[in-house]
Length: 346
Ligand code: SAM
Ligand code: SF4
Image (cartoon, rainbow, N blue to C red; front, side):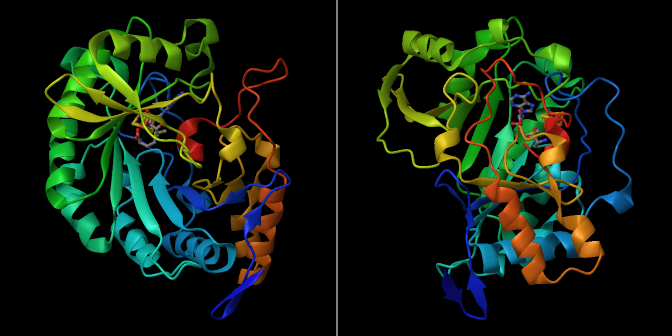
């Protein structure tokens, strides 16, 4: 236990020796795309506004997390976080905080990139540091089929704007699916090398519409590595990875050099090093992406019944103490969480 100025700092520890430092906040369950692996074509039944946290409520919980519980990084996600009009206000309030190390918390967003072209500079002005843009294909028709919207050009514009505005680093996230976009490994790497950004391949997880995930048909990290090895020179980057989920490789085609990450959440889970805690759009703490709904702890309900900052911090600590050792996707008893990725915050 350490004292951080006015408060006593107690960290978000669990029974397996992990301490959460990285907060993922879902700012909305809504989205302007309908990626097949994430949402059904008709979208979801969106959460009523009064169930979602207000700006002041989100800001209060982030402040408690940083000032009382030792959080050092905050990533805003969703749904699509750029659909939250007050994102700049929330980022500004977050970067005004000071962590236990005396610095502003590191801030990031994960976005599909639509609308980023317009917002990149105002987000930088608000203090945002980093962005991950999801881009699974470079082909307009594949993009339209995969996301059910013909918006690929907007994503390209968003990536350009993020680089111009000085967001650092800009990373790209790609989920590969057999027969859909798994023939684009080389094209995606070449695009990332051209843009000078890091590309991370993410294994598809059982978090979207249930019929969309098939363990035996998924593109695994080992498949991706093999395909990369065919076209590029790969050199593993230095261990230790710490809590970073991506195994990193330096990639080169003889002329250009860059970094590629592979996030093998399913086939080589990194649960033992996980340092994340999650806040859902409606103000519940989840210790894991794969927690069951009954394991969530609603800070919103506590807050709305008048709980103090100290009581909210204690409830958050209790929720994280119960974090399981791993997600268990590969185990027999695994069942997909009731909530989809877009509500939890990916
Ligand atoms: N809308 C934003 C976006 O797409 O970047 C943020 C939310 S989205 C849920 C966050 C990330 O989760 C995206 O990179 C997306 O590709 C990824 N994702 C969504 N469903 C997934 C699944 N079933 N398996 C693996 N990744 C998934
Ligand atoms: Fe929307 Fe992101 Fe889900 Fe695609 S992955 S539907 S962009 S929330």
